[in-house]
Image (cartoon, rainbow, N blue to C red):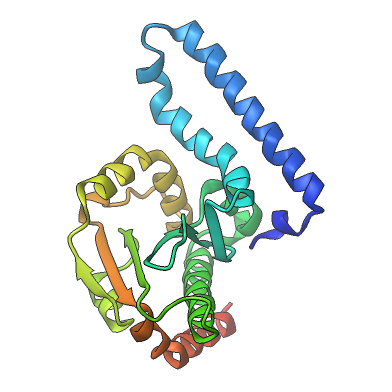
Length: 218
């Protein structure tokens, strides 16, 4: 979890609710002002802002479950763990301007692997079954890298592809930050990577070595 969730719980809820209210007010006011084209005008910018505003309250409600500062599971259950990299709200708390580029990419990978190791520990402790399917869809990793980590590649569903497209502005600026230049993520080349809980646990030593190497290079 990022530093926000180390704040006193009443302060977390206060900020989360404030962001929610501000977001709703701004959305309503602008929709009225831009009617009848409000949806078309606001959608590309409004959706990233909504994700930013909703992240803390969705986390406090348990819809998002974090396993590292930049790895979350959406609506976790014993059958499937749908993993995602952090939102723009998380980047605000985790990244610094001087991190952009190679340092940011190492941070992302380190937190990604750290989150997977924490999921492994839940499986080892019996809080998650070995049959749980851990999956995620991303443009960030290559097919070779995913397979080297033990994941099986599948074709993403149509809904996943749509989700990447409608969130393009958020993905664009975060990807550009990680590349330290204006860069456009190839969302149409996104891959769905899947691994069972049992197979994931067997790679724990490999992941821990990779994390140690990345941290030593910071």
